[in-house]
Image 1 (cartoon, rainbow, N blue to C red):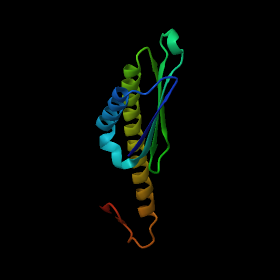
Image 2 (cartoon, rainbow, N blue to C red; image 1 turned 60 degrees about the vertical axis):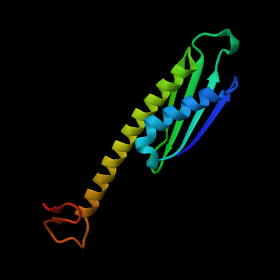
Image 3 (cartoon, one colour; image 1 turned 180 degrees about the horizontal axis):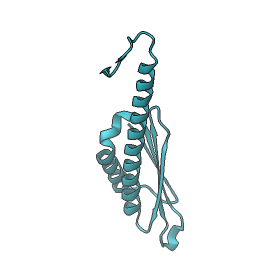
Length: 128
């Protein structure tokens, strides 16, 4: 799983980079083999004025499935990162589950239409 972190409007500290890598590793490790790339863009929308302006955008590119995009804006960058990563992990799991159920359905339909399969048998599922 490739991870790219970009900061816009402020300097990316080692602490922020390490926190992001640790959280990503922990929350997405179960799906690491299905993830091609994770891109994270961090930005401070209001600059030095403050307020609810710390934005974290996460893009997770999956093998053979649509990309997951998540955005979160908070007053604290660590909170924005944590919330965005948590939401991204849940969205990835849903996407993978949906993709697996779709693949199973396709396989089931293919096995029912397999001319080499004897009547009354499904090539994948066995006797009906």
